Length: 191
Image (cartoon, rainbow, N blue to C red):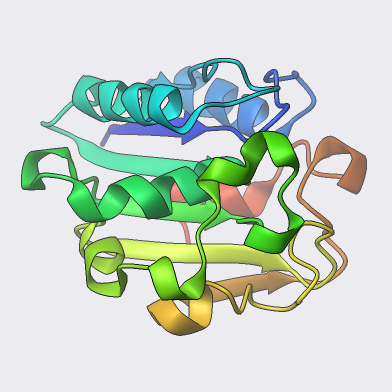
């Protein structure tokens, strides 16, 4: 059975071939799935409204007759946390994975308008944004979330299932994350 995927990158990510998201998109496409992996506008100096528009356009492009899955990395996680509570039912995907959302205090100035603090989280809205499953993946040594394991800024207040990868940094190619079986297995429902 085929699914429809929207893969969203983070700040300063120009979708390099060595990145796990690029490799995930290629693998899913090869298997015959619909895959949207857009280059988000101006990744070196992102604007929240431009990224919001790109996210909504991507959701609208997903095939509504298939399972719809969203995979966010880094700044795209904060984008999701900001936009998700306001999604209409028709735009809500079936499953969402948030990988390495950065803490507000660790964002570079160019991404500051994306910051989401615990007080700003719309718990019910975020949880309802995925029809079946919303998970968070983190590292215990992410330089963009130095508070540590489980991304306490998000997983605890949202009550999310969290997979913690020891020593994974920010899940970049420099951290050894090119091909990543965990995320492809989750996407394909092989867990």
